[in-house]
Amino acid sequence: MNETIKVLESRRSCRNFKSDMIKDEELKTILEAGTYAATGMGKQSPIIIAVTDKKLRDEISEENRKIGGWGEDFDPFYGAPVILIVLADKEVSTHVYDGSLVMGNLMNAAESLGIASIWIHRAREEFESEFGKNLLKKLGIEGDYEGIGHCALGYAAEPLKAPVARKDNYIYYV
Image (cartoon, rainbow, N blue to C red; front, side, top):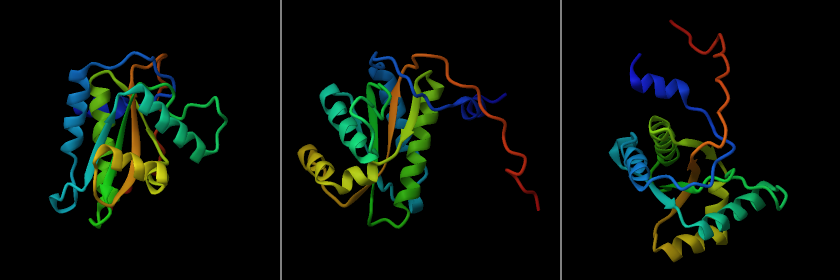
């Protein structure tokens, strides 16, 4: 079977990561793959913020936890040491779709390298808040961006679940 198809069929969301940092070369490869996602009219509306600093990662996790309404002991990033935040320029009409394709590329590239991943939501709410606006300002990122998602990355602490069977009515031929 084609290696790309194998990756697409085997990728699963991880909800229990080891604390070990992924290798720089792996991270760079995953990030590069994200930049090759298809975007409407080739406008490349998304940006990716790669968070490897534990202190900042934990601050973002705490903000995400509050937005989600979970208890203080919950980490919405499941212990992943790396968070890739995808935002996209609101001025581009396809920005949400563009950012979603970047997220898919990031997760599939990670899978191809043996790195576990999961898409975590609430990025929109984070970057509409003062917390997110201040973070972008602190990082020197200017523009009107919408948070699309967080791609949490790391090594899986346990085997991932097997895929569920595909539903019968997924595809219609006409």
